[in-house]
Length: 507
Image 1 (cartoon, helix red, strand yellow):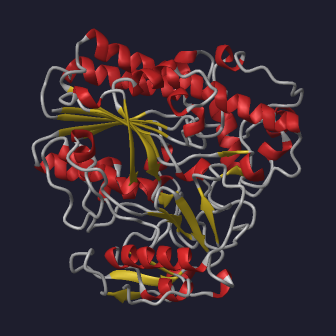
Image 2 (tube, rainbow, N blue to C red; image 1 turned 45 degrees about the vertical axis):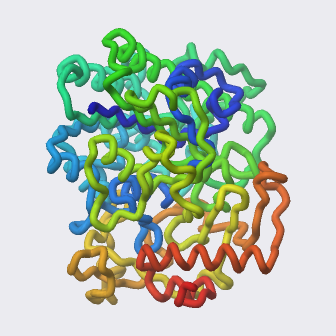
Image 3 (cartoon, rainbow, N blue to C red; image 1 turned 90 degrees about the vertical axis):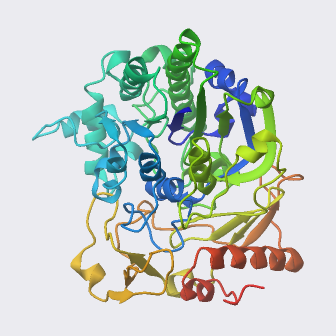
């Protein structure tokens, strides 16, 4: 078996033609025609690195800690592959892998190639950036704010983008093709091609942007803050959506180069391809930009997944309505090599769905972000459960790797830490248990924390746009029983039950 795992960051379902999107995506659609397309695939933990820990381990990250590295006791699918005789290679321009909070992921692979220059990657070096020139070039919403250094670095990186070949996503595909040229005829390899695009900033070569004309006449606006759109004009919303569309179109062309290689070298019959994302991105829907802060509507939570299995041609071009989520990917990728899932993995292989041996692998998908709501779906309904008086409820981090996105925990954050031995999934290792400080550098970092924190249900069949929230005691009780079962399986700490007013004893 040979496997190519393609991960695009912040890839909205609504952007893809095969999911009914309005942006022309002939190459995503081309892959869909050779794949099983999953219609009810959901996120697990938010945002970037928590999602990747879910992918590696088959367990939800958000119940125990915020953003951080793989832990010493985690079962990474890449390590299991190596132990099973599979060579794994990571190609990525996702700079979060090379910051403090992602520093143990890329080292789990047999080899890796890091492509520089995305977002705030500290790549272009300039002692005195041209701040005033940037102020004239970029929209005030894009330039200002508490994370100004983060955004200025992104602007500096963009000064190095002159032609299509300079863009990191193109370099990622170049690197992946080099790997395939050198190794494609071998057996037992796993290529993880991870592209940071179409994550913001939404910057693409001019030829793509020209395909999406707008009425907007202002300065460059490619990187909205995670906030409501109440102060945005219709032209600004149109501009952000056009820039996102241009970047998706660019990604589609780059995916096409990979698919062309599979065509030219007749690899479809010997190579599995799995394509997905970590989460979506709000582009003005429900009055929001971004992610993390707002309720996790389906624009964020219901994400694309396509699986091409070379030995199952009857599954090509089919749709799957079974419920699945990010934690199922580890078991699925390992099953492609006939390798077992991790010892404490809770995800399910999706291959039986492709083979027709099962109609479902789960009856509930739980998802969320550390410190936020408990969210769940059964595929027909979604349930957002928020704690009352959220800021006053107990919340603790459990980790042996106290790192935020791009910094270490401060001494203040770990001052009250104690060793805790209450989890089986840590394989006998104690973890640090410390109170989660309100001023810690964990998501959501922008805009003042969580917003619109009202517990509610949505009927996805009658109200697919999630515009009509409602409450129903019997339905909520059913969801809470299923959620408590999942929390027990994940060994959720006791205070999490208290935080949400749940009985700790699942029925």
